[in-house]
Amino acid sequence: MQGNAACAEGAIAAGCRFFGGYPITPSTEIAETMARRLPKAGGVFISMEDELASIAAVIGAAWTGTRAMTATSGPGFSLMMENIGYAAMTETPCVIVNIQRGGPSTGQPTRAAQGDMLQCRFGSHGDYSIIALTPNSVQEMFDLTVKAFNLADRFRVPTFLISDETVGHMRERVTIPDSVDIVPPAPLAEGSLPYEAGEDGIPGFAPFGSGRSVHVTGLTHDERGYPDTTDPEAHDRLVRRLVAKVESARHDIADYEVINPDAERVFVTYGPPSRTVAQVMRDHPDESIGHLRFRVVWPFDESALGKFPDAKVFLMPELNMGQMVREVQRHADQPVVPIAKIGGELHTPAELLQALEAHG
Amino acid sequence: MRHEVRFSGYGGQGIILSAVILGRAAALYDEKYAVQTQVYGPEARGGASMGQVVIDDLPILYPEVTDPDIYIIMSQQGFEKYGVAAREDAVMVLDADLVRSRPVCRYHEIPATAEAKENLGREIVANIVMMGALVAITGAVSRAAIERAVLDSVPKGTESLNTRALKRGFELGEQA
Image (cartoon, rainbow over all chains, first blue to last red; front, side, top):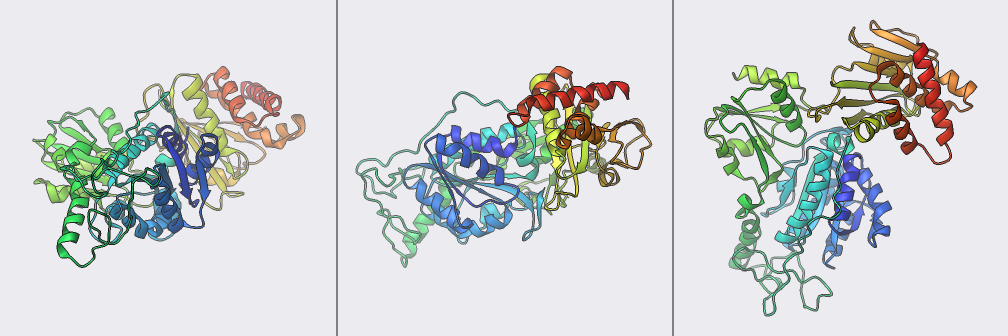
């Protein structure tokens, strides 16, 4: 099965029953699969007029209590940015898939890249936080899509599956379970205000039709949901909570693999460059070489770096000119070396071997 | 044993579908591991199209093809772009009527398009003839597996045509 099809199947299995999207290479097969599958599953597929409307429709659908998703690539992702901020501000649980291609602009529609890693974190204006997952196989396109829906609902936050052309278009064997764990959002407790949160910072969710009166606005609002746009304290309280509900849970949300924790030279990866690293490590077994592979990149769990106490250098192959490497550099005491590659092809095992030798 | 198989021809010949079918045969019916990838652009129809498959007994880590040991080439442009650099110990199966050049590696000439057009009645199954020849020559997957994968992948109503094309490919491969 193709990665994009596995993403769509994961969404269906996770109970997603709304897709609003606008086709764009290399994500189109997700929309195609959803268009075929959703009506039979009792869901709704809408081919929207553009990406602005696509994400808007997804946000609206999510507020009916329906699991909702859209899928796009770079140019469409850029168009979605304003409403992604609206989803963050209104704490709308939804899943946004970005099958990355070469950018900027229309760039390389049919080639792989990881150029939107910072855009997915910081692309909309203002302070907010999101969750982003990075699959490296067709199986993970299924598994992490399911996980994305559960995280979106649990944290009431737009959650991203940030993949790329290689994994989206790759075909390999995938195992689809009979059922998956579905964790719905916590309901809004009786007597609680719609944006009143406990210690975890996550208010209960009362979608339209649930019988509660909820006002939804992108303006700075108080716990009742009513605009309060001039009071510094109201804004400070709201936005700090929006960021903290995700960032303070980063060790809990974290999902990463640690190979050879005693290693001195450690590759740090996410997405398909991890497969090149795994190949190098299988072909050249060496316990002094380690691998830290993130399946969740945002919120960034800096404590993962500490799993390699003997690390002398972190090597970071990315399919961009150096994006997540900045985050690792911010937290690591050791030197962090970017191995940047753009143009659309994965790093080859030979290229990573060269990088290893250069830092031997 | 890792095989890297590259298919190239012009857009519309079913090049990428061929790669998908071969991967399917290996991964679903031969209990091996397979990853299929492709290179294409907006200009692919009529231009050089390329699909590739990695087949291995072990889980496949690095998913791309860097140095194929098996080639299926179905156009001159495909040869020039994706086949000319074939290493000496590779095997190339080429459609003799569509590819003028010959590689430095071992190669087999299969008149798949002529066979499909003249003896099977539909040019469109030329890729399946090539696939049969590939399997007969290299044994990259079993004949039973490729037959099931072809039947999974072709439109309803064309099963017998495609099965005949595949078997004709086996014969041409055995003779080559």
